[in-house]
Amino acid sequence: MKQAIEFSHNIQNFLHVGSRRKSHTSYMIVVTDGSALVRLGKQEFLVTKGTGFWLPFDCLHALTVLPGTQYDKVEFSARLTSPVCKDAGFFSVNALMNALLTELRHEAKKNSPLSLDGPAGNLMRVIGDQVAKLKVKTNSLCPSLRNDYCTHLSLLLKGDRVTDKAALAAISNIIGFSTNEFEACIIMREALKLSRSGRKLEQIADTLNTSKETIVALARPILGQEIS
Image 1 (cartoon, helix red, strand yellow):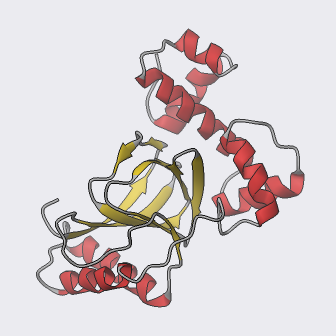
Image 2 (cartoon, one colour):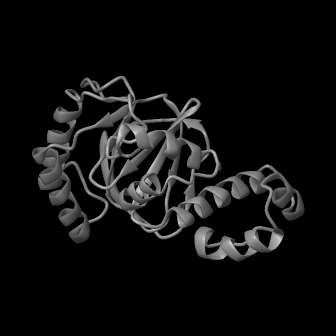
């Protein structure tokens, strides 16, 4: 990082599959459209539109961003001396935080990257004050989803089949596209991971119990690249 606090607004046209790693900074994401997935240990959380997720420095995690998702990210350097939240989890995006992020997006359109010197810097410092008071939770896979539907969400994330129509409709509603498309993204996420580990297309198809043709057909529209 070049600054103690940095802001970016990110537009993800294709599926982003982040590797499992420790965070070099403390950072927050707030999804403005679409959905993202954050893995902490064996648990994976769905971050939907209007929801925030905080990840402290040195937190082992993996971030997956679904196609078409837009999100704000504010990073805080490990060298920052002011206090920040030490735990990972969902946080409520209050009216002040929402207003600050909206204004930073406007500033970023005019002048990017944003500097701590000037109006944008003042906004980022106010966000810095806010994150010191964050109260985070990980007691639900997705705060936007009814608790009894979170079990079905967990099954989908594992690649298992879900037949409960009410649960599927609720999940589809919060992620912004059909559960069939969501399942395709999960399949292609696993395919990309296997490809990165050196597996060939035939091996990937066998491992995922699908056909080579399906993987080839889904790769370009979902990943924006081919898997060989």
